[in-house]
Image 1 (tube, rainbow, N blue to C red):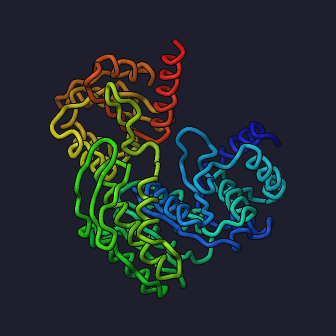
Image 2 (image 1 turned 90 degrees about the vertical axis):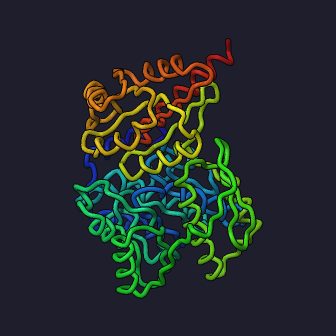
Length: 429
């Protein structure tokens, strides 16, 4: 298969949707020789902050000279973002070559793998072929029955902030969700937990005691914030002095506290991550779609928050950066999310909301979303086309206004592509 045929094949497999269980992915990996057994992992689960945490860790490890795999989901602009080595996307040719190799094995199975299970097998083969020193592996959804949990004990299992999301699949309480996420912690590994509620912490601690894993909890109270602006956040951390991260949003400070705890544990395991390496790695980290500035005049921020927990974090960031200034907010949401709570958090920042319908069968129609927002006393218009909402927001904001687009990472990807296209067209004029 060539690259285009590979994407068509993967899309063809997607009809199965999400089917919990590890039987299929275990069988597929067995058929291709269990490449995952050649690798070491940092396995990252949680509700919010997984991707940013993975990006920080990957960049620090690359800066230290380790050949580092990175597996993320979902992608923002192109499929190849899912699988990276040293923060470079898998090439079209290598993706096609590995998928071509794996396809006959997948099709020989009585119960063929799902789309995500196929991704997982491709990435394991990719990292093994390229002899990665370590792989930063982000869970797709949940933990216990997620395809990535096919690995043996990781070096470290990381649990980021836990909130209520995917409740139909994972449970309707923090304890139930934490339980399924805790199952990435296995005998022989260490665990690092984002400092959070007692409900989640008690579940994670019990799992660690059950399997004999050492538990480390992040210490965000050690972080002494110096400054926040649209380009960076600077802070002091004991033993490191001043550190800087280019990822804006107050929630990133919680994520980087987890990262610094993971680095502490990695160094105990014999890794060589010196303060200078950590300082450089954190400063070089790039992670798209999370409080990312994609335009300066007007200021245009995109953030992939898509649940109440994530929206609260976004709101903290907006307050820290823009104070009391009101924004033009582009907002789209899935009908099965707790959008009422999300709106209550974000509407105090809104000058006006431009409601859109994300490109998803589960999306809440823009017209209905606008009605709900107007009933809450905030001006709102609905748009059939996302591009019309973007153009209208830019026009209304003028040179000095502020726009913030909030919604699924797929929607954020579409916005980024459209803005990039507009910039290229302007340069050609």
